Length: 332
Ligand SMILES: [Zn+2]
Image (cartoon, rainbow, N blue to C red; front, top):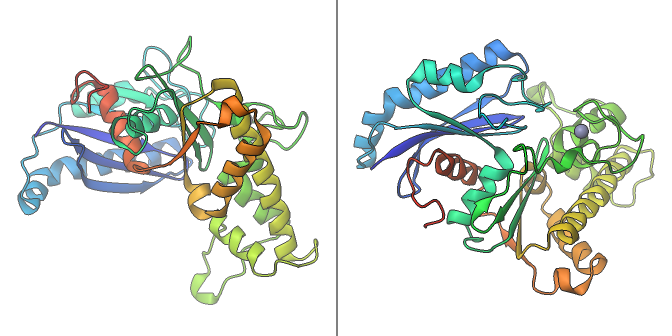
């Protein structure tokens, strides 16, 4: 089977794998996202080399025929310029100004395609997930950062300069909390996973941990655990502070998704990302908000669809973006 070496480059972690023409995801490798460019690129290169080195033995063990990859496709946070050369405006990644596509081409001798991760996810969900063929399709991913992907007429919508969709960096509260991008009051500063955990550290303090968990760090799931540990807690207690952080995050994400639905009138919405995974109750709250706070033509036939792919959807979309596996792209 033909394969593409695909990647999901996220603000907290990266995942790389061989994607085969039957949508299989093989030999996946995970790498933590570090904040310094050199070590980050080294880790990424090592993971990709590992997959290439192990391809034949992996395929033999799995009883599969996996050809050597014919292209590299990466879904990444941030804005990819029209020439596809680099990753810009990604405050959670150490890639600003780094010629990523050229580096990978030189290193691996294969064509390289970079695509915004929200767009890659949407494409993957549209090609393969529960949202297959729902058009227009809006995918909203609330993770370390916030991204959307929009499929219109079977293709991801990129906008005039390939920069559409950075909805986390629109203003929620003018002059409000500072966003990881440096500007004030953006949605991401209230409901992005990084903002939620940084607020927990700043407002509650280090995560209470046993000696065995000396390195324990805040995650959205842990903020939820603290909040739910004492539902009637006083506002200045740790559960009370966690509840306030989550309430503000929920209000922001509900407003964000309702705004998107009113603007775009999608046929279906896929909700995904690490924040929703660590905080499952948020999903119902979002759906209820959209149904009560938008007009009937917007929500009457709107479907909220489970994300099927998760990280796999980004890999499918990144592989699709190379054009090396599936033609025409909208074919399933
Ligand atoms: Zn921002």
